[in-house]
Amino acid sequence: MGAAALAWCDRVSPATAADFAMLEDALARHRPTPVPDRHALVAGVPTGFKTSYAYRLLHSSGCGPPLHDLNWDTFVPVRVKVFIWFLRHRRTRTRARLCRLGILQSSDCPFCPGVAEDVDHLFVNCPRLLRIWRCASADPRAGSHRTVEDLVDAFSDAHLGWPLTLCMTTTTLLLWITWKTRNRMVFDGANITTAEFFTSVRDHLTLWLVRAPHRIDCAPLVAWCASLSPLTP
Image (cartoon, rainbow, N blue to C red; front, top):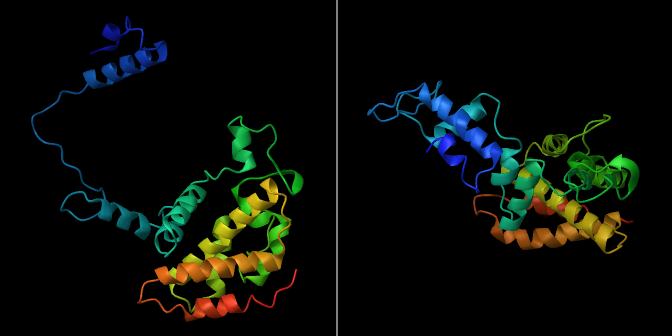
């Protein structure tokens, strides 16, 4: 059904009718054939298209999805994987995002008046986190604007002997506790100290370790977590 035939229908807005008109005009220049379509990657194996080939090509080209390993190479609960998925795609409900959507009037960080609370500020650059990242050996390189990617790289560089799964799980744990403690401070008025932050890290890790694959030696992670115990506020 073309745009002209749909224009009289009350359920079709003028914008939708215009879209149908553009689609009809584009399709008019192409004559369908009875030959089945064939999908293939421009650079890849000649056996046809598979999703696994597409992912392999993305990773080999250096253009893989952002923080892919942080989402998939971990043993965290599903709800935390969903949280990381939103974070990776910059869809975490920060004040900057809620302001952009018209839900809040101000994008300011609750702890830093005049500074927008975007993903990188909430999880990396907020001054209240600086001591935490130093204690956790996850302090990113110096710079005016450090990103979540910088945080992940900093922790991985500081723990080169760890399996990738341990590095990604630990970084995910730190980001998850950062999000939870931020919400407690904003909505419950709690005053979370550095020691309390790492107590929450240890408590969560105790629950998550039972999810670790048997092939993964979690001893380095347990030792790292124990080293955080003496911290004081």
